[in-house]
Image (cartoon, rainbow, N blue to C red; front, side, top):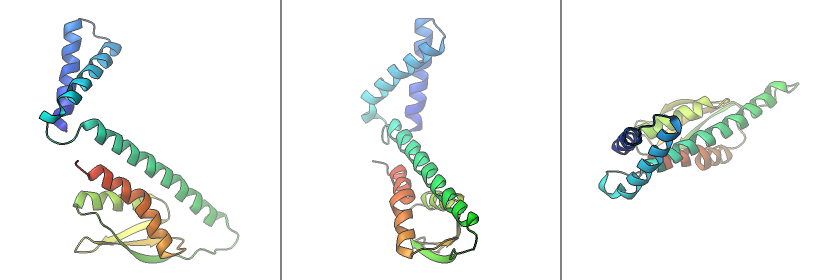
Length: 160
């Protein structure tokens, strides 16, 4: 993937030299032409086309921001209650992620959302131990993580 980005940038710089115009618009035009050439020749490069990865990373950021906003709203509701009615709890989350960087990314995203903290990962890397500030049901919490954060982390990690 990195070689594709490098070739695309070199082609866009070459376009600047060929045209003799060193403006941002001309660079963007050269980048688009280079992108089309890299797309055409993607079979010669290792890995998938790099714009697919860029799209999936942007999707991960969008899903995380949505989850972040929802978690902030939930924490604000807890804080603004006249009496404390939340039920904090610890639970174990079984994950299907296999690589270390995917586990670390998922754990970081879970910890960054308000109201949840990852306490650790099991030695066999199949379980994540989480503390939640307001625990409704284990199935609901697991479904929420699995359908949003783990799904997009797995998409970013797929290399096909």
